[in-house]
Image 1 (cartoon, rainbow, N blue to C red):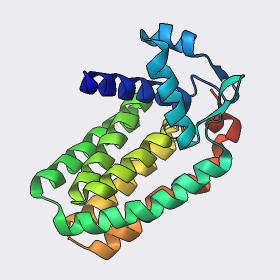
Image 2: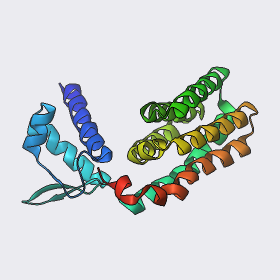
Image 3: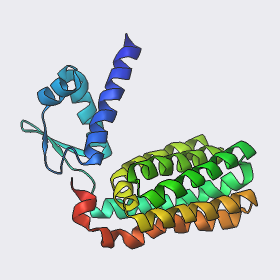
Image 4: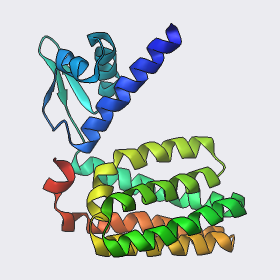
Length: 220
């Protein structure tokens, strides 16, 4: 019974968090326990627990006797996430260069091949999925469970930014070329080069954020 409650609470938490990060729930929007419970097909209890957990993450603020409201992700949050992520992605690539297997390299090369095809076609949705997969393989190849966990969270938090930037055909092509260079460094087991390239890859997004417009990056 305890495990069922935990899995339900975890599922509700992730669904609400997904809706905040994707922009479905907008900044300052009130999150009503009853409405969300009906939408997700659960009672108010797991919703209330999820909102408390989201408050700890800084995505929700709960005002006593008033309600829960979306805090969301700010412009500074996004820049901070990418700055931190750039350092950690570099470390991840460095460790991956030392630990990556032939099977993982093959997966990365197939990913780049498919990304070339979808980037040329302007298939943004597939590009986001392939980008997710590329980084998941890299996180696993690092050999660090802790680093993989932290980076997966950061990658998820930045999902709206990634969807918008990868919908730009030029950025999608450039991003995949950056992936290609990282893989070449991994094949040579050049840890220092892999670290530098992975760091630069994430920093490219920071450099181009103003181009996409903060209203688009922060709002639905």
